[in-house]
Length: 254
Ligand code: 13P
Image (cartoon, rainbow, N blue to C red; front, side, top):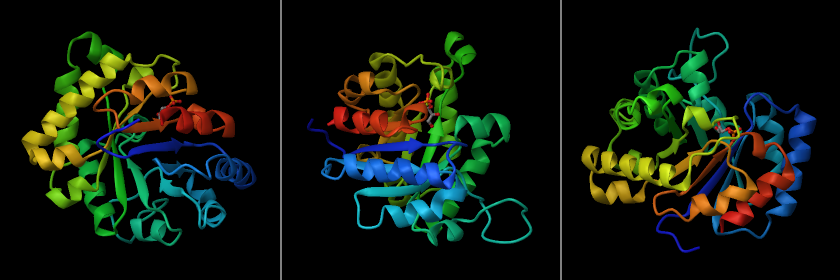
């Protein structure tokens, strides 16, 4: 598939996998995906598996991401992890503002913007998540909600930082529910996000930013989603936990 931007497919393992399980998974992915050059492949294990996974993917085409990080550089923040600590394990990407963190940890878009700046300061590429709830969609508020999340979560980034930022559109009603947005629904919100980026930055920047779709992505729907003009990859939850399904999503996307 010929696309303007290189596809990026990331597995968000969430709070799953012991170190031994993480190694089984990533070694299998390394075998299955060894020849793939067309897609940037990223795995985001829990913090506890980062070290071992980073060793297991040395000299491979798989890159490492984390699932969150602190906006602070050091100090008395019990339980938190800094961007610099992630860099020690060769982490390149960090998911920020996942809807589960917005919901359960009460992360605001303003906080996510601080984290995005801290990530860039350490040369980590943030994957900033946005998405509306079912209630918001049904009330016709999708663009209002997603537009505000985009503006507020990216506040303060300069153009070159924006180009190194990835956005993930994850409608909350499609996460872990088996209910995928239709390709038209996904494309429509992705195009809207790119238009917002054009307004906030400039067209040349907006054209470079990769916008991933997330929410019940499976081997059977990956290809159709990726054919959409503004869908530049996927953030995969449940289906990233098994070698077969994640490898097939990557292969079917090409
Ligand atoms: P599922 O693929 O399990 O729906 O999760 C999507 C997600 O939240 C990825 O970040």
